[in-house]
Length: 82
Image (cartoon, rainbow, N blue to C red; front, side, top):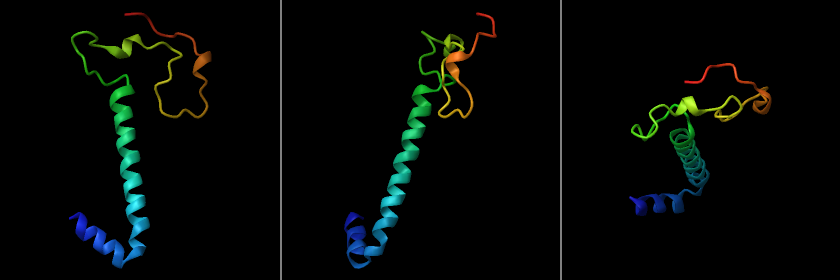
C-alpha cells in the first residue's frame, strides 16, 4: 500500500498538500480526543479509588478547552460539599 501511495505521489506531486493536511487533521483530532479522555472531569478511569472525580473540582478549576469571557481565578464557591 505504501508503495502505491509513493508511486502516485511521484507521478502526481499535487497530491502532497492533500496528504499533509489530511494527516495534520488526523493528528489534531486524535490529540484533542486524548486530551478529552485524560483531562475531562466527566471521564472516570479508576472507579475503585475515585468514583466521582467531578466532585473534587474547585470553583476556580478550568476544565474547558477554551473560555471566552470567564476568568476562573475570580469565581467563588456556589455549591455544597459532598
